[in-house]
Length: 369
Image 1 (cartoon, rainbow, N blue to C red):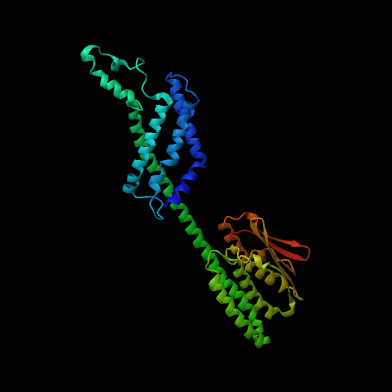
Image 2 (image 1 turned 30 degrees about the vertical axis):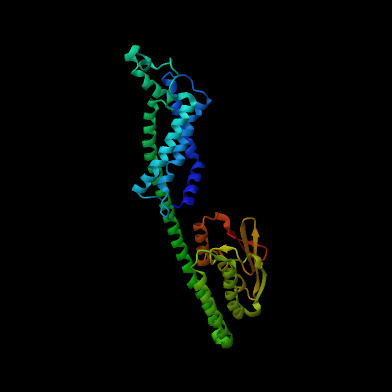
């Protein structure tokens, strides 16, 4: 990871409930053990120090192992150890100094020094230098044993946690890659579907109006070019989706003529918003195929796109006969529902219902500006 990613991962660890849960459990076990051993009741600072100690381990220990300087989720074993050793040694020293500041260091002369305070006469002076050395050390020597254990445990715990997060990152990347591959496959499935419906609608014009069929074929080539450019992407500006729908409607206008009457409410200000490709075109195609085209006198097509809060609301409505259940579950809508599920959209993100003489498809999308 780069430094910015390491800082972000460290911050995320402070926000995980399991981090604080593990630290609280460690503090309870520590203080419970003290009580069972009959040690004096700790003060408020000593009561919470073990939990804060555990938090420092869980949050800071993995960071040196994760810093690789590149896009790799963690550093190599040798580099990670070389980075973790000085940082964990500094943290260990800080803990030892904190213990000394809390009064856990050596006792004043005359209190509990045992044999180190004994010795009289000229030979007793041999204990003097040792007593002075202990007195001037910030932390009693017996706590350096705890420091060594702190250092070793911190190195091991940091490596374990960093390796676990590396596995989680790789697993999440694999899931995203699988979802993207499936989304691309579904979008690729839409390309021949759109072209097939457009071409099947032009077969009538070849016999009835060759001139109109020629113009429709020109629009069909433009539609194919737009599909080849638009569909392979995972996200695309809403303006590209608008142009794709317009090219599709250009073909349908030639085929349906005055039977198709349109109403648009699609502000240009929304064109920079990015969505997954081919989200609106299937709704328009479904409205024309099962509604307007199926009516003897044609019908109305009403398309509305609006920004609602942090999302985008699409409403495609048409007059004409209500689609039967089988038609409402055609390839276009089924494909759209599958792609919405891959994006994590709620089950009600796409609704198809009747409002009087209108068949209405409502789509709610989470968007990125």
